Length: 315
Image (cartoon, rainbow, N blue to C red; front, side, top):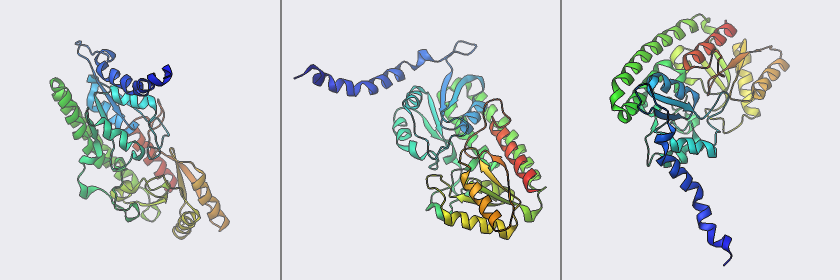
């Protein structure tokens, strides 16, 4: 038998062996905090989760997100380097509720030998939106209701505490302090949205990501695409939204940072062809944060940028 054929089984096992070696050796790869103890390594799927986890973890963990600014989690496929980072983590955090649809199998397999926590699945079912067009599945975009997103702090703090009992008091204190900040942010959002005349509170976006925002803060939300971006908008979707824009005399419609803008531009052009000029009111951050060193680089910052953009355009 040729030598290469005899080696083939070993070559096929090599990637798995490398991942196992990385898992076994993760203690040496992690950095240390001031007292010499190794920091926890936390990997989150989205930047929104990573930013939230970093606030709860404080100085006791290194938190990184897989998906950067402008990345659509509905369509995201894990790369080889992503799988390696997940395998080396002490804790993996993801949204759940089918947001990371294409990563489901990987996250399920990772959960067999390390803590893998879906932060949004601790939210009571009665608080979740289940639009009929989503075939009975819950809407995963819970972060647009700030009061709901505050409920993800508990699962994060618990997971960190279970891994690092010595710093559990810090995790609980950080979560409590951040929850207070988020509830203040929730009240601020409600006050800002109330500045828009009630008849003008119509939010037209590229996909139906803002349903929780609309329900919480009293805004009619019209998404061109459905909750997931897996299916593209068609002519019937454009016609439906254009008719709403005409009937409601909508002043502005919005593009999203993680969705191509061509669909919203099609609505704008179709409305213009029927005698109504509607402008693009700005870019909203839907499924990801903004770039580093921008006002939308953190979760509270993203919320504020979105609200300011919406209020300015619709007033």
